[in-house]
Length: 163
Image (cartoon, rainbow, N blue to C red; front, side, top):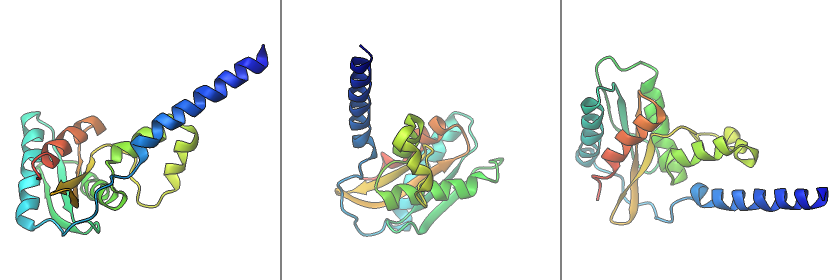
């Protein structure tokens, strides 16, 4: 009887790990030319508008595919620590070709997901999303200042405007 329980536990664990793999997988999109300053400002604007609409004080960073800062804006009264966090989230999303929420979810699952803590530059907090235009990653947006879900909501508002 105990052997059946162990087998079921192993099978359940394998299914859980297999379910996690797609969320950790990088986006298949190739990198493209860097986002322009004009388009970076256009991506930041809806993220900031979403934050203002909800009375959240946020910092927004837009980076190119290499993680270099293209545009940054911080709302008044945003906590000072959010400045670097927004940039780090954007860099993580660009360099690893996936939303930072994928790292957050992997870490929350525990087990092998704890390895995320050893990956240099991987930010395991929601709020960083790659920016895709014409099927290519042109950069990423990072937002910080609220809860991870609030940061993600604002980042999505900005990322959704890039075509």
